[in-house]
Image (cartoon, rainbow, N blue to C red; front, side):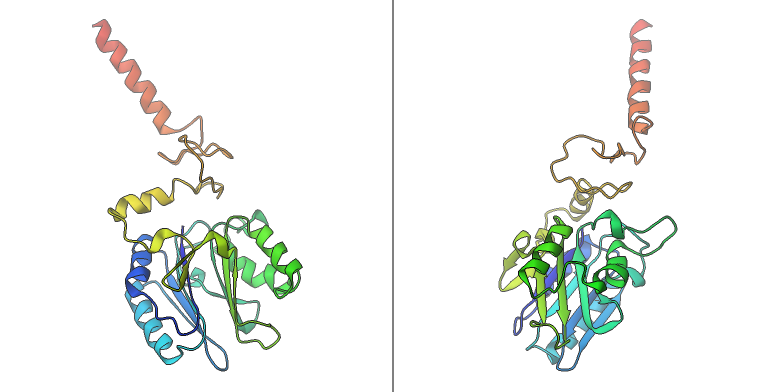
Length: 253
């Protein structure tokens, strides 16, 4: 479910870890690097091209924070327009990237191709609904709204006290001086299995995230993770019923 990576100043990116994340999360990639007078952003669908661009930009600006994001789409079209990071409103000095599924308030309506993060960046978070990021009240409010999600904001706006913010930082992993939103940077034994496992937690129908789910169906809407049909109309149930009838028929004859 996406991989969001944060690099403090003077920390060299671990390209093998980023490449691991791109293999699992293939729906677009992007980066942001804070410079002396702004934030440089790059996005694209080709992982190697984006990694090459990020490496070059980071080498020119090693003394400021940076982020890299690889997307696994849960809402919105798979397109470069939905690749993280996103500008915060119309402020080109501030960007954000996100890992997880955001609340319903910012999920796209039918036929809206935007992702939930893009909607949040464009229309919801620019108004600072929880207050300033530099206050305990604002930080707690935003983290409560995020739930299990994580968010990184980079800014060159002098109105902010810091040039980098990690929200729900404790839910991520610090490794070698780099912060990762989840273990997706680690090399798994089987990439196809790893990608399949990501969908064990995110319902494609309603977007609900349930890391404790043990059954086949989404606990919120009844969507079947195996055949992608809502209960009780899932193909798995029908196949099981057909198989049972066939076995009974063979037993009689």
